Length: 158
Ligand SMILES: [Fe+2]
Ligand SMILES: [Fe+2]
Image (cartoon, rainbow, N blue to C red; front, side, top):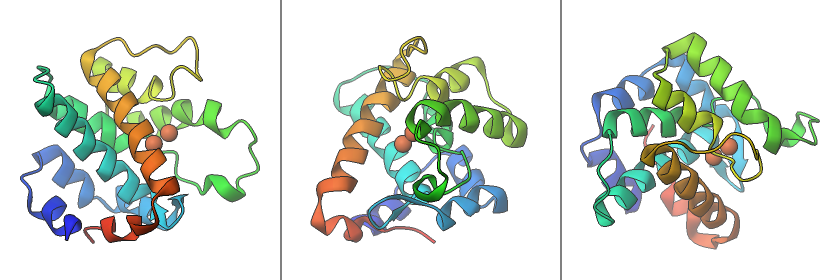
């Protein structure tokens, strides 16, 4: 099963540190798409970003890319009942503020989070390879999670 692969694969220290952090684990309580939690979604985006970088032979700072991917949706609420019609536009900034406060971020990690909804957030442009990859990976994962019926098989890691 794919989720076992996800669990067994060697993830960076940073990813493991977040997975073990109580604050980060709150993301399990929020639904992102269908039956996928925000926690699972972020893990999937991290994994997909790394896969894209490796497949396309793009040199990246993997540690920063994975941390940015893991925290790109760290907005800490269920957007379905949050009542913000502009959630898509607002949440990168909320995630950035929360992630900065709880975990500290490099400039590159900040850009990854802030620009992941580009081109919706027109002026927040991905300015490094890591941000471009996370932006693409997020769209691919979101689409997959929204339309695939067997996506529950991707349910991972406790
Ligand atoms: Fe997002
Ligand atoms: Fe996302």
